[in-house]
Image 1 (cartoon, one colour):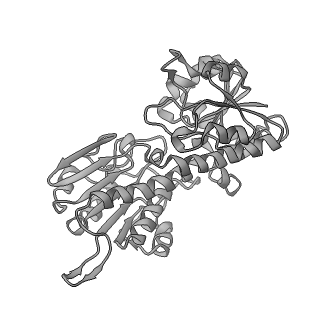
Image 2: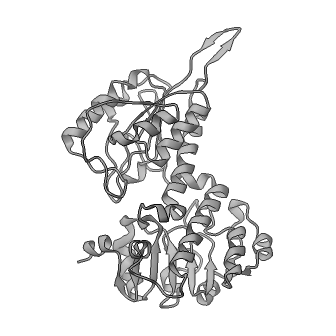
Image 3: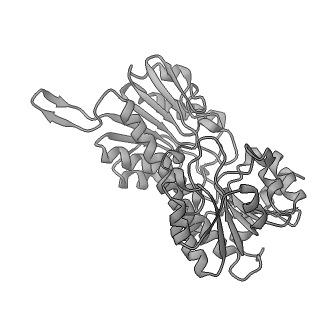
Amino acid sequence: MKIGIPKEISSGEGRVAVVPVMVSQLKRDEHEVFVETGAGIDSNFLDDEFKQAGAEIISDAKDLYQVAEAVIKFQAPEVHPQLKKHEIELLKDGTVLICSLPPQKHAELIPMLQKHKITTFAMEYLPRITKAQSMDVLSSMATAAGYKAVLIAADHLTKFFPLLMTAAGTIPPANVLILGAGVAGLQAIATAKRLGARVEAFDPRPVVKEQIESLGGTFVEMEMPEDAETTGGYAKQQSDEFLKKEQEAIGARLPKVDVVICTAQIFGKQAPLLVTDEMVKLMKPGSVIVDLAAAEGGNCELSEPNKVTEKYGVTVFGKVNLARELPTHASQMHSKNVTTLFKHAFQNGELDFEDEIVKNACITHNGEIINEMVKKNFS
């Protein structure tokens, strides 16, 4: 196939969907690879590296879209700022598109994808099964986000993270509370521990207690529901009554906490509100909250997407798509994930819709919606 790798056009996006080392692998499978000029420059992958890997560099995005039979990109398609045309409309009818396709953009994009008979694979919809672990871009980006969130907190906290024994006296370690123990939360625990902090973590799924403790964190205990997660391993949306109990358990710890890292999200739904305005008042002046769920409404009531809010002496960072602040390694991980999916889906030349990975990750094909979860929303 002729595979196109365009330069991302979303504001602030510096990652590239496929890096040179994976271009080499695609070339070994006898695919042709076309890369838009400067596609990898913001993540430190230069055009010359793509050339050396066997890619052809194309200077005009329109030309790239017209030559490609499959387009692999990071973000969901949008209106191209220079060409003044939507990326979906730049694609040839029947093209394969592999990218992010978050639920909040479905209403706008899926009818367009159907109209142009685009075969669309959305990285968010890969099933949580062992066979798909090497394709799991959500986990890859959550790893980057969890790591970076702790560094942001450490940079803005007016205290040391580790315990220090100095001639001027003993400096106690910072107290860090992680809300949510998915991939981002676990990486945040590990990073905060490496920096020497005292770490607690809260999650409504009792099954993660062992994982938290294995990283050196303390699991915040409370009465948990039996069905706290879906069969796919995601946290379930809980009742208002249970949410209130969660807030009470979290609030009891806030007076002693220096940093809160919020990572609790429910796929396709509003993030649970775990730290209210009144609860923020309980924290010490100079404390820091980094909220990775800001785009979905936030775990903290004061969070605003991509904004820094200060109230009651507490600084709240509403971080959206934090992984893009580590573009080199985020691109590297995404590249491995997405090319593994591409190879799996097209290993026999034709799509096998009986295959669990293809059946779940494919959103549209030949004008039809394939994914059952998405199809329900358009019925």
